[in-house]
Structure formats: C-alpha cells, structure tokens
Length: 207
Image (cartoon, rainbow, N blue to C red; front, top):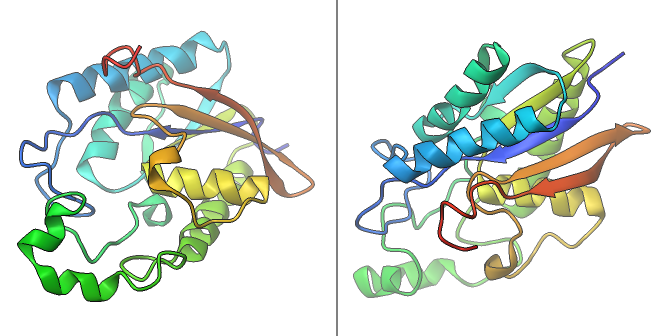
C-alpha cells in the first residue's frame, strides 16, 4: 500500500540581515536559530511515533539544511524534488513589503492583480505542482510516512487547495510558521489535512 501520511515541514529561520525577499536566490542559509528550529521539527516528527520512510526536499539551501535533522533522525536519504521549490517572485532581491517600491517604484506596475498574483507565480500553478508532488510522494513508498521540506506559500497553497478554499488570500493570515508541520492523508486520491503543529514557535519567541 502507499504511504500512510504526508508531512509538509516549512524550513527554519533564514539568515537575512537586510530583510530582503530572497525567493530562490543563493546565499540565504539558515540562521543559528533556524538550525535549532529544524531540529525541533525533526524531534516533533519523531515524537509522533510514526515511521518515516521517505524524505523529499526542495532544492534550495535553507530547505536542504532543514531536512538534515529529519534525515538523521529517521535514517533516510533526502530526495530533491523541484516541484516543491519556493514560488518565483518578480520582487526577489528587494526589501520586503512597501520598501520594495521605494527602492524601485516601477515595480508597482506588477501589482495590478493580487488574485493571480501578477507579481509572481500564479497561485493555481503552485497548488497544482505541489499537489502533484504530494501524490507522487504518497505513491513512492510501500509503507510509512513521507516528509516534504518546503516553503511557506507553497505549503499554504497545498492546504487551501486541499480544503477547497479560494487560493487568493491575505499573506498575514497564513497558518504556516517557521518549521511548522502540516500533515495530510490521501483519501479517494485527494489530499485531506489531518494535523498541524508548530514546534518552532517557542524558538521564534512567539509563545
């Protein structure tokens, strides 16, 4: 039979002293706290008492580093899957939020349609590739769980799509904190959310 459960883990905190939108850019590894967050996520997975038989990882440095404690905890080798990478964004390399427009006012020309969104990878495209990767991962093993280490927006689109929610959303309302674990099962060929945990929140100073 295929995998029992799929766990999507967001990477830990990134070293980003200039607060730039790093997207898929090189040179953004985990911070010291980010490594501890990744370890907390691995321990949380182990504490579930479930067998993890496969580990699938986004190719970016921060996700590969976040996957290392999971690989060590369960003795599995990470497998890279480009489909679970960070969504692309035309604002990459600029300061986060309104400061990007101060740095380059012409960027405002890309903000005409937040429902798509016009400044980056379409929400529907993100959801489709993530769901495809999830179902492929589910079928890739005969038993146990599969862990995916990915990115906030990518995981959030997977969740909203699985729930049948509209994909356009307020970014401030994303339920996908650093090193969080969003878990799914597959029923009748469709993803069904079953659990959500935030082992990194205490390290982030939010609880």
